[in-house]
View 1: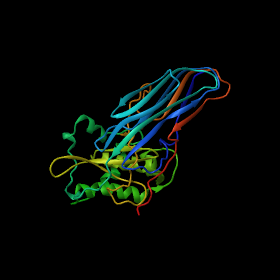
View 2: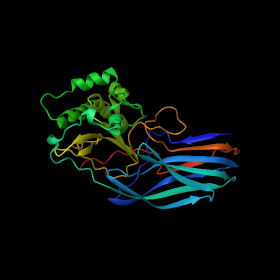
View 3: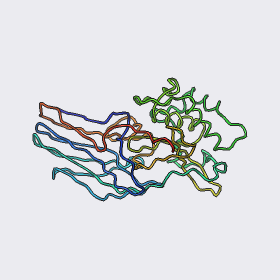
View 4: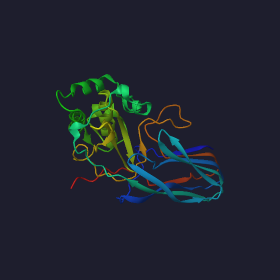
Length: 307
């Protein structure tokens, strides 16, 4: 019997406690089986190096001895892949990876009115993809395109224009936890959680030729958009879509697991909105289903309100 066990809990990676600027983040899984088991493969995202984050693997606990761990890069995101050849009935496999993570605090630009949006023709290949539609971000749909045009700010700065997209989402989408449904559904329903608010903001940005992408942390996601400073340097500006934080500010300090919203996953024909926690078993002989526990556990937790 072949089994596929994954985390489909609204695309999130678990609620964790607040962590210091430099902290150790643990991730992995525990698998308990109740019959002879052959061919276990588990994959899950792990923190990766970004311009605003440094990562170092500092420890791991891996059992049984025949388990192997390797890392695969998916569009800048790191995915851990664990292969276990076999487990005996009643045996428990456990893989815990510990990363030292240092990420920069999210600080609003000092002179936001001086920021500009890069011309699409000057973007490199990696940046240009953040102007394209992606799963659940239907930025070329006529409704999204027309809405983006209607929010044009005459005579304002680029910062004012992007803030108009932000303000629209805040004023027209009520925060409500639920299944992941995407930008068009958020627009139609007028409600959604961090994922829907993020997808709609990103879709409006891309329709308005503003490069934007999703940032995934344990239990949450938020968007960021690409700008250029007065001296020509590129700067990604993070935006918190939940709760009432000023535009361009966020209290988020959790480890960054992924940046982006269109990933080519080995074995999947279609691009995926995010890199999931997944586990598959090629042959399982137990009469009782196996038990998989992910670390951190699935869940949602928006940032705390501003003080």
